[in-house]
Amino acid sequence: MPTEHASVRVVHKPWGVGDLQPWSSIDASPDAVGELWFERADKLRATMGGTPDGSDGRMHPNRLLAALQAKLPQDAIVVADGGDFLSFARVGLSSSAYLDPGPFGCIGVGVPFGIAASLAFPDRLVLVATGDGSFGFNAIELDTAVRHRAPAVFVVANNGAWQIEVHDQTSTYGRVAGTRLQFADHAGMARAFGMHAERVERADDLPGAIDRAFARRPALLDVVVTPEAVSADAKSGLAWVPDLQPLAAWDDAERAWRDG
Image 1 (tube, rainbow, N blue to C red):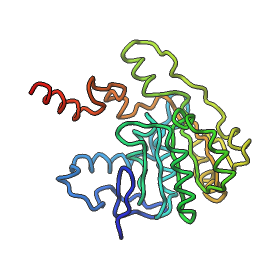
Image 2 (cartoon, rainbow, N blue to C red):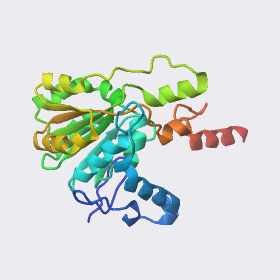
Image 3 (cartoon, rainbow, N blue to C red):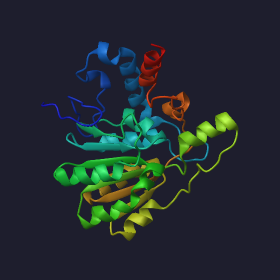
Image 4 (tube, helix red, strand yellow):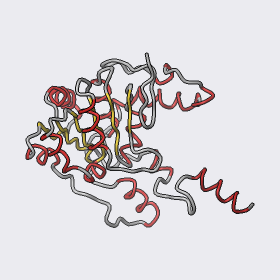
């Protein structure tokens, strides 16, 4: 099929509803991407739906992502947004067109990207999968989606925190300051704007809620997930930024240039 360019990743072989085709089937050179990455991604996709809940009884973000992926149509446009949640979503969700904040971490783009994409491609399902912190940047634009009848589906992974920062503060300083949020009622806010919205707290309720949201666009699902899930980005220290340039490779290059 023709390649469709998105801001971050282009997938040449989208898969249909319920078909969790392994990443290794995508047309890409192992030399360019890495066989180990494919193996890890395939393993994750095979186990996502069975990821256990946290000790708080709330579902793991991977349960949400697996349920969404199983329902995505072949030509869906996926927008992923967040910090901690994006670390899960960029591996757990796949589509023929995919956008996210990119390497500079310009979070908050999910809602406006989704509105624009759904107006540009009204015949395709547009899914915005976002963390609750990033959602807050432009949550008020749900009103815009309703007024302009932008047929996007917004799914908020609500873990009540800026979780990468919570993890970093806890592991580095032993305390948390200013980075825990409420488990706010985002569905209630969306309904106030006239949008179909549901709050989902049990993984077993996800398939039905997703079907209803896809059928009643624009729509929002406020899905409560555990803050105990530790993402790959949290483990690697996403909060760290080099001194001279925002990306480590650029920082190394500038240091080499300065050293002459």
